[in-house]
Image (cartoon, rainbow, N blue to C red):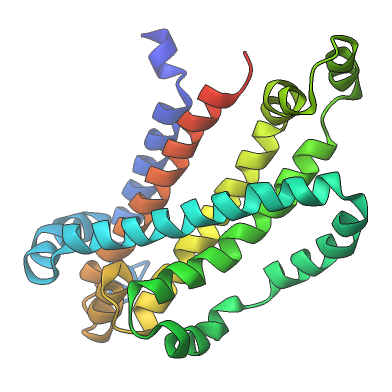
Length: 250
């Protein structure tokens, strides 16, 4: 029981519930305008009608699937490219600054170009999510491999292991925490870009529901759909956390 009470997950849930209670009281007392922020209870109660009218669960799966596809592509491209920049120091120094600059740029403004290239298809969403998602993965993969302890590398060399074994048994496990930091950052930016494009263009997904509820001035429905977006983020954060624990050395 004591271990459960000390659980970070439980502490986080209790904190969220406490904030929701404070917000509930503030809105009920008129301290916060209900037109801008609804009572948390109203936002929760809005889930069934929004789902009945807009297929909230189906659109949740659409956004989840597009984010998963874009993130998977970003990992498949980003990790090997980050490894290449690590192995080729000259290219690493040359392109790291450019990658950081590209990450800071508002890539979402490129969506008209991708609409022309891919049309009004899910490929546009995947491409627009892939771009901001891959950059932090590339950067953090390189940084993670550069940060591997030289002692571990020297121990590996003392056993005359091959470069392949060096990578899979020493370098990659040591770099996993840094690489997954990049993946977490990447998936968040991927999700933001995908939802933003769903909001701007009628692609379906949760962004479309947020847009529809907003333009109807349905404040509880708007926040219910926003909470659904947060659930997508929580799902990926939890999932990658489990994968990282599996890959990290004991």
